[in-house]
Length: 436
Image (cartoon, rainbow, N blue to C red; front, top):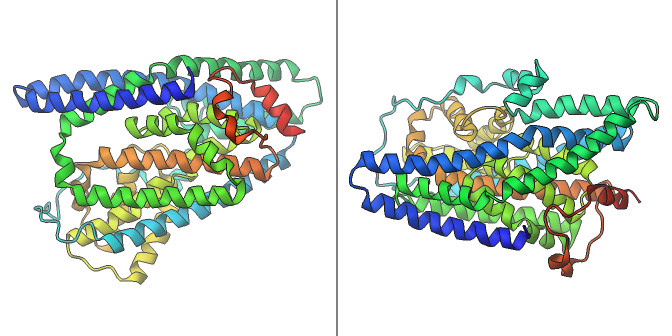
């Protein structure tokens, strides 16, 4: 399916989903009937997300192993990883600072005009699972089969790095068969991705319909100031990321953004980073980024480069402080940013990760954890925006690291429409061209 056609179909799915959700929300005969109808929409979106999750583990494994095996040595892996982490840390700091700055400027929680939850109200979020020690343990799998079964991307990445380095360290010819099979598996998984992505418009329709049916459009008006302020901050962050990409990629960063339109829409409408992963990798390779770099940097970014989520965390904490009329001096806010910088790296494998990070940090600064109940009512709409920006950040990061490594093939900016359709590009050819 052509990228432009997929973008159009996803947009149509979003619009139809909003209309269908609004119709169900306004016409349902009772709350029970509304809940039942919404459950059918949720079923459709869950099926699509399961199809996506089905391909994540083999796609990550095959692309990482093939990429590292073709790199040839551990020094290349370390160099690429170091450059990626430098970008990730810088982007995280900028995202946290921007969230803090915009919350102070726009004051979304001031004069909220809504009843506040009791200070001792429970959020039922598993904050005990979020510690740096547990994060470090979670990086290393106890069983590769368990990591594959639960789609632990970071654990799969660790195993794949060891597996790829083992292949690369063997004398030439000793692992030629498994290298060939892994390269072929990459092509097979890309084709499977194409098949699964053909259902994306249906999944987007169902996800939007379920969200609007259960929450209603009225919630957007009630929380208009918070949602509007947050999306202004996200828009500014996206401009900063694009500008940073322009410093290294030049005009090609706009080509990348145009090619990633369908991916951004998919991430936004489903509020799922996993749903966007396969398509992000495919579009980056079509952009010219070598699979050697993309297959390593992108999975790493899913744990260390969640720019939208980082902005959300600092923004949400200050919103709660403003809602309760609690003053946080600049010194305390800077300390909060430092804590978030460390604690957010434990997000991998934690359900409702961004909310859990916020819930864990609030008590450290004598802020009521119950304030999260104000946000949880509309978190689906906030999650959509921050997930889309996460994809923006990771796609630019991969392209920039590929550029730094000399692994970004040249393409003509004015010939996007003439580029191969999805599933028709040749990964090996791109690797050979980038290696020249």
